[in-house]
Structure formats: C-alpha cells, structure tokens
Length: 378
Image (tube, rainbow, N blue to C red; front, side):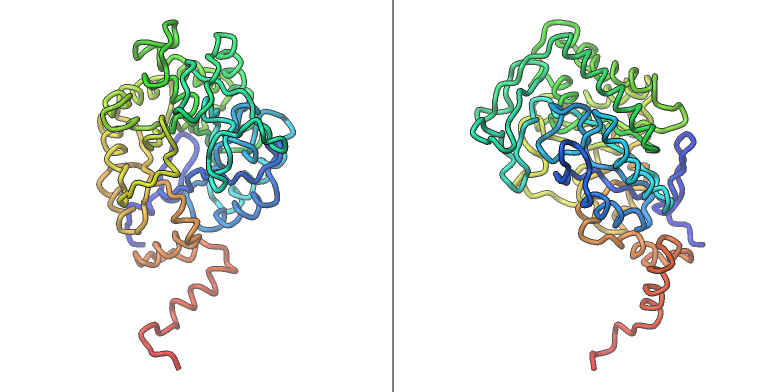
C-alpha cells in the first residue's frame, strides 16, 4: 500500500485514528430542549460511513443557559444521553472515533440561529425567549449586545460542576473523545481574553488568573473522564490583529493545558468581538494552519488544523510537513461527504474502497474502474 501521511494512523492513548481526517463540530440548531432529533441521526450518519478518522458532535451545551441559542444540542440532563449515545454508536460502528464538543456560550448565548441573523434574541420573542447571559465581566460583545451578568464565584463553581457532569454523561453515552470549547468568544475564551475579562479577583488580571477557570474545569473533567480517552481543547489562536490575546499568549496557554493532561489543541481563531462563522472577510485556504504549526512546535503538543482545508494535496502537505497531527474539515465535508474516498483514490491507495461500506464501495469502485471520463457523451 502506498504511504500517504494523510492516511497514516495516529494513536492517542487507547484510541487509534485510522487516518488524520476529522469532522469538525458544526452547529445544526435542530434540537428541542437540547434533545437531538431525527435530523441529527440523518446528518451524522452521512459522515459515519464516509471513511473519517474521527467525527465530532457539534457544540453541546453543558447547561440550558450555556447554549448559543434555541436548537442547540444539550448534555445537561440524563434525558440527553440516549440520543447522543445513538450518534456515538453510529460513528463507532463504522470505525470512526466519536467525539463531542462540550461548550458554554457565556455572553454569546441567547442568540438567533445564523440564518435568522445571529443577533441577540429580544424580549419581544415569546416563542423562543431570551435569557440572561453571563461572563467574566459585565462587558457586552458590542453596542448592540446585552450586558452579561458578571459571574460570582458561586456561578463559576456551578459551571465547573456542569462541565463535570457533562463529561460523565459523555462517557456514559460512549464517546471516545471530549473537546472543550475554549474559542470563538464563548465562556472560557472570554475569561482568557483581556478584552472581555476585567476582573480583579483570582479569575482576572494576570495570565495565571485568566486561565484558572479553564484549568479547574479540565481538572474536574479529568476526575470523571477515563484516563485512556483523549481530551482536546479548542482555542482561538489570536483574538484579533493587535488586540487581546495573541499567538504567544496562546502558546503559553497550550503549554499550560498540556501540563494538566490535554492531548490535542484544536487551533482556530477569532470570535471574541464577533462571529468567526459569519465574517464577511475573504479567507484563503488553510488560513489558520500557521497557528497550528506554531503551537505544535513551540508548545510541543499535538495539534489539529482547521479552517478552509479543501484539497487532498493541501491536507496531505499539512500532515507531511508536521504542521498539524490532524486536519479538521467542516463545510468541505458537507459539500462532499465522499471526500475521504476521493482523496484515497487520488493518491492511488490500494485500500481506498475500505473507507466505505460495501454497498457504496462496490458501485463506486466499478464506476472509477470502467467509466471512460475522456470519452464524449453519446
């Protein structure tokens, strides 16, 4: 079999990725009171048998007020476990490691769905009402956003307990990996960024204080999460050019996260003052890969690159040149759920058909073998 770094295995603790390609968490906003729906089973099934090394369930609220908005998946109740366990089982049945992203949206909670404008829910909305948001300081995202309630130590301890219980439920549901969402301006990121954290107690001010909340949550999760299962952390590698936390700050954060048992850093960026998803700025393929490369090298920790990773050659170059250990893809996989199979055939892998179920690989392999693409249509 040809040796292609993108399709090499990668082991973290007891879990082995059959290749380096991962489905990035993508919010669907199709849940009811946090309970996943038939949409999720259909959505995630598309990826479960598409040949991925691992796949993540979207940002999942550890509490009702931790959701980005109505429609977000939840894991604050035992009633959520049954549906989530079905998704984890779907992934695992097809040799795809199952991951779940645990999140609290903080001051970016109580928002409308992206296709409805991604703006704060107003008090006029009675069908899906707004709720009080929380944050490290009473600083709104911008002038059109509500002022969050500054969290007390009691509030902080409650969120810690919410993350701990969420991790227990994630394990009970059968997930292989937890990713803690510490990016995009959500709660943990807002504690880390000096733009949103102006506290003068143990949770604000210097670097050690601003990472304290995240470090405590990691310790709480590790007290209940099996030692043989990986723990990922998504961070925003920079807040904004010339503002807030920069790349060097995040390298220090990555080193601290490694010291308490985080296995992989998922290297995203931005979001502290707006939405990284709805940005109108043009991006280039792999625009965040340099962050992954720098954090991997300087913090000496495994990293995952994400952000406009499109072609097979591009993804393979990232792994070949050790710019990341894993590549996470979202919208590209939405556009083409057979991306992995196509990449495997592009590299002429002898086992390309093994990345699909027999009922798919039989037909697609014959299509590839016998279709004369150069011939003119009859």
